[in-house]
Image 1 (spheres, rainbow, N blue to C red):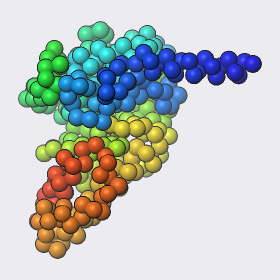
Image 2 (image 1 turned 90 degrees about the horizontal axis):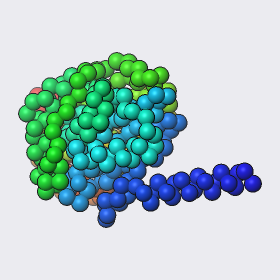
Image 3 (image 1 turned 180 degrees about the vertical axis):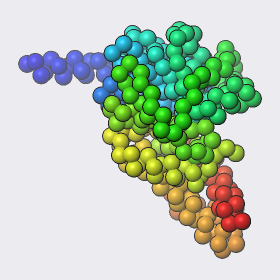
Length: 319
């Protein structure tokens, strides 16, 4: 009888969480899901920032400690941060003690503002180069970009950058929760950190990995570096991996599919480069070899760009 009651309560709790989740209409309903011990993730939409999703698109993470909370990548705007905080409070009413930001792209960190406003003593950690960039032109560029993409729905957003620099191998303890920083740059950007939650063997990958979505590689990126970062992440042998976008899970979900994609891009571009083909010729020749990725969000937009990015990297290494 006790087991039946427990099951009913659990099902009711899950259903209630879904019913009262942040409702973005056709984009879906979003709430924090338990992924490992005291670790939760709110899996955002896979679509690009828009008025419909209010700019929300990443995977905010949450670690619950005895006296407080630790947040990883709270989201893309002040307005988004307010909604993320509402969902956090459904898990716990403890104060937020610390935030980790995985990289400079604003969809991951511009919601710092909302948390800092409510918890002024919160410590915000990021790569030293991210701190510099966020406090400079890049921070303002991201604020403006999010406002334009969401048709003004993020207009209250202001830059609140990390204040505490962390880099490869650093250990951070927050209220009995132990974190280790892994940084191999350039990868997705030249500001990436991956955050290991030692207590639960969970690794927050940032945008070094995606699932069911393909993101962009900008001028600060290295696709070859991204391969090395993900191979390194696999060697850490974590129980749980959290990508920047897409489902959390084992490495078979959260790392291997995207890693295989980037490796395959490298292989076809290297072959085409050796055959004196141009990047656009390589794209047309090999696109059918990527049929298993054509359903991923952003494939049509980004595949040709990825071929070009990899071509330029391989060309550079050949000099």
